[in-house]
Length: 209
Image (tube, rainbow, N blue to C red; front, side, top):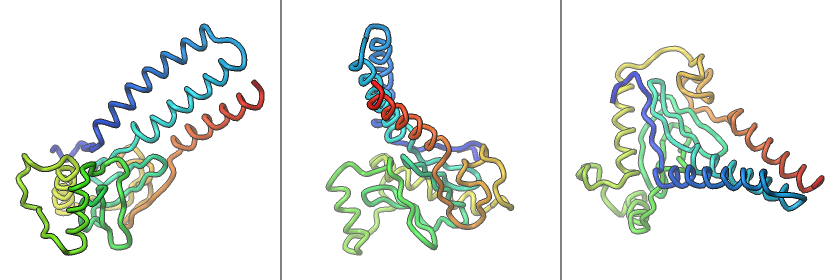
């Protein structure tokens, strides 16, 4: 990985599903706008817009981004920035977890979907099973591979840390603004706008249509 560029980890299936549904919903929305009439058409528009917003927030937006400054853990409604100095370990139980001195940051989209693997991870967490960090990379589960690469990133960036607080959101995301040595969580403006606009449209349609 080129250290000057962020690396993004996400759930491929849900991301593809979100794109497919958004395309379908937009086509349905155009059909309703062009041919629909009356109250039922307005309700259909509101429902379709709400599903598009939900697909974006829940399936398309969530991801984990490795930057020079730290990790952006982007979940449906919140984003957490974890500076590299605060990353103690990255592992997987049911979801990918970033361990810091004060708390554990969980990644909503990067999760283990195989039940037996989740049970094995939980047993390892409880001390009943040895860690499998030396497992062959070719046979590793996708989320385990992501955790391993993030651990490697942490080791790499900790050897040449960037000093000073983050002052540009383009550098490591909005939650990183002003962050220093502790994880910082926020609800991004993007999420507030999407949720507020969608709720306003749905309420207006059901009250006025």
